[in-house]
Image (cartoon, rainbow, N blue to C red; front, side):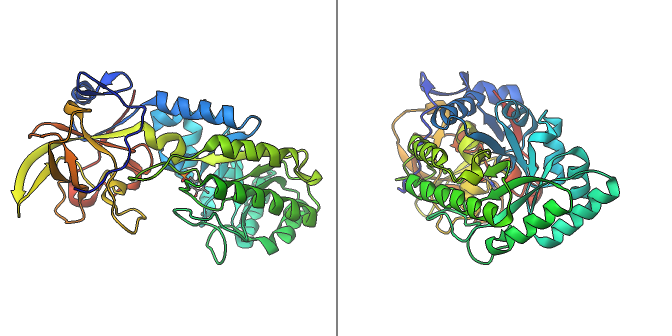
Length: 407
Ligand SMILES: *Cc1c(COP(=O)(O)O)cnc(C)c1O
């Protein structure tokens, strides 16, 4: 038997059956008409937002929509947060469609094409500039359109978020502009008559270490102040990045966000004078949505091989690549898994839960302890609210995409 990660405490059972948003998982699958199915419990997202608001008074909350762009979910999140961070023209269109105002959308990402810059500038979204070349293209497009572009500069910081799952700052990087070249770029943007919106400094992702995030935020504020002074500007906005992780695996402990909020309040109060009028924001993806999602997949076969039991399900890595361990992890570990119809029941056997794809990579649970399962039973895989449906190769092997619903 191998360990699995913790089931988010938001999920409880009723008479041994899993409830999602107060509804029986089995009923939701019947209502959807088909499995596999992603169910997103919006109350869980609301609780995360409320927890953030309580812990971070006066700090803006942005949603990094690449974590989960499902339109009905995005609409409801856009109404709760202060901004939506997008990374393509497709996401920009989706954010606008979901009701986010262009004033509160910022567009980061290397490799923005001409048409993408044009869309962002013409709609009035903020472009987070990733290079001098992109700056020149954005300014030329704005001039051609006769518009004043809203431009922020994404800084490749000279530090990184310690212990972060995915490093996106520090050293040679395709993201942002190296800190030492930023002041000259900002002066150029201002001289060209653009509306300078401030800085975007993103140092990493998926950290469960509050102390590391506190350090990175302090370093971010200090860097933003230094760059502002060197450029002679008072930035309207400072996007401090995010990096708030969630516990995926056995032994992971959830992040102490209250501690981070307390430290940020102190750092904000003591901010250098050049940032006195600057609005601070944090951009979060997975911390807001990952724990809200459950992937429901039905057992289509139960078999034995080499003395081991295999449960073969109708879903797989084509929907939940991350749970199979093939999305940015070095060692494959088990996401939390349960049987929807025997929720909270004691484990009875050790099984491997395998997807229906004809590849050995398609393993959703490796030798996990579960109650006895039969063909037709629903398996619930938790932490499916972020980097699930939209971050998996749905076309691979032709089984097609999963259904998604918000409850
Ligand atoms: C991916 C990304 C995020 C979201 O990361 P999470 O780990 O989902 O919170 C935020 N900001 C930027 C710039 C990103 O690239």
